[in-house]
Image (cartoon, rainbow, N blue to C red; front, top):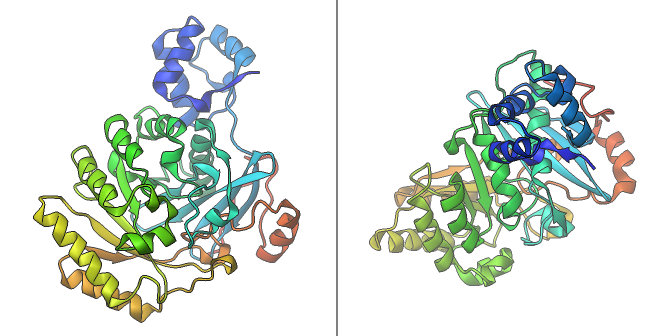
Length: 382
């Protein structure tokens, strides 16, 4: 079997080239061809020695994930469904804004955490993605979008590890992928513009602070342990006090001076004034202890049938946000994007494992089937 070079960050690729008897600068050239130019054909890498190109063809390849479907939302959001084998698929979402382009990337096929409000969690856990499968989502999306827009400039300015899965439960594959995103010879993204979202795997938060500190988002969703135990089962292992202490430790290494706390608004579950007051009390407690706090991002719940939950009314969300803001807590309300193609927060992969329904979903949602993976640019629905 040959090696997929998307599995390597630059240091890993340099070690691979060393095993081939090649100098480090060859790894840098190869890395740039793959990530900056989107090349997957060694013959086209013109500044590599012909002997190296021939050698690579015998032992290596650059392989993206097969694209099963591609959808465009009325608001410009794009969602890809990638085949990762054995009946599993993962989803990746591009969200365009006036001042940035954000890619939401998956780290696992399914998720083992089982948060009540997340459709991926209801799907269950299949397996961790390899580094190449994480990086391939960015590799494909960046260069497909460039072709669509007819540009050689970078389209994706931000990456959020907020797709399917708990990134910190796939740590060994995550860190090389992050390093590839950050590397100036790769995608050159700022640490402030790469975000890992976690439901609270405390030991791995501490490891990430040492190994590859990027922006951190924490899925809090409840202001007390009893409620969070019910909504985010991982809380039973790492309760709120331990999680917040890990967040304060992380801030000493983080590229930003705050942590983002995500809070999914669930009608009559966690959206009452007393819940807002409990958040305020938590903030004040940590401020008194000298802790540096973060900001809260209130997320409208995106319903799916198996959850048994209901989205908070806009008025309730606004009132909740005002209570936090009036107490001096920086608070935003996330704008829902891509919900017409099930690409909004918490909606990913509600039924992708049922492969018998792919044809039915494509007919219902006007999905474009793409074969081979890089052949057809997406058509704008704007």
